[in-house]
Image (tube, rainbow, N blue to C red; front, top):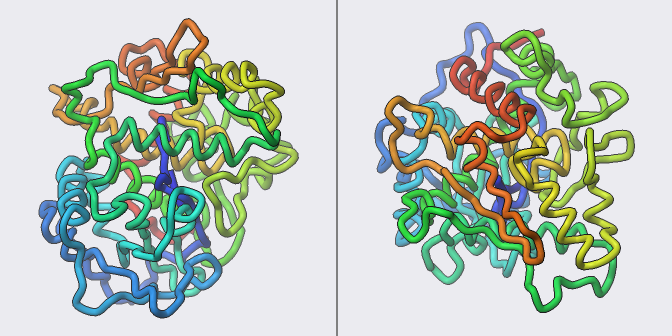
Length: 391
């Protein structure tokens, strides 16, 4: 399952997914051994498994324990990028990773985002309640190269999703070219790195697991209860979905058991304001396409951290979780580098370039977006990955 700006999301990477709901603490149950030490990046890399592709395992619909190549661990740029991503991650996220039952590199042969999007995934097994995530090796580390830097990662994700959403055959960007991300702090932005891209991909997949852990206490069911987390948020006054989504009742917010990166919200769920998903699916013209993208990702007037976040309510939560991971170091006093300060979106033909993180840090972003970020940040600080069972 996957992730942008954000964000942020995730497939080129972060292709997508979710899964069912697990049980939680059971009286008398054995204490789970941590996957790794939250203070040791090397222990995390050693704990990452290589998926055994000879079995034909596909987490979408199979679930269970993903098969691993016995004795195999990441090497080369995969190991280097994973260690670097873990080292720069917030303490709460390192603990979330170590509380999983497995982290996998999926080496399934694939090419491009269309081919590799389903090979990044995250799920809770509906029977055992165990938690797993996996990243596509060929999406992130094609030909053994380092993962793309963050701006390139987000650019590829954005344009892949836009192309997949577009339902007008022949519509193209033209000579001006497609939208792209950069950093206003380049060439020396310490966050515009391969490590930050890998951190974004990990956070996106773990965000899907987090969604179920927070909102569905019984395994393999749709027994949602947002009242403990998002309705209202823990400040007691606002809902996470307020003035972002219009829906008939909370059941419209329930995702399918498996969420894909280019899924759009079903009938009955829409954005609070323009543009809608349909405006990306049927933009009418290249100029309309450009305008819709620029408007949607204008963080000064819209409540989305990324295109992915605007597609469905659960992806809105997942991508906001990613944003809190990538920006956490900037909330410390004093801030600690690296953290994402800028993802400047250039959409040719427009006189402004949206930059969601920059506007967030300079307190001129949409207040709905700031509220959602605060809601998820508060959950990060107060609720562990595995919550006590709520009947």
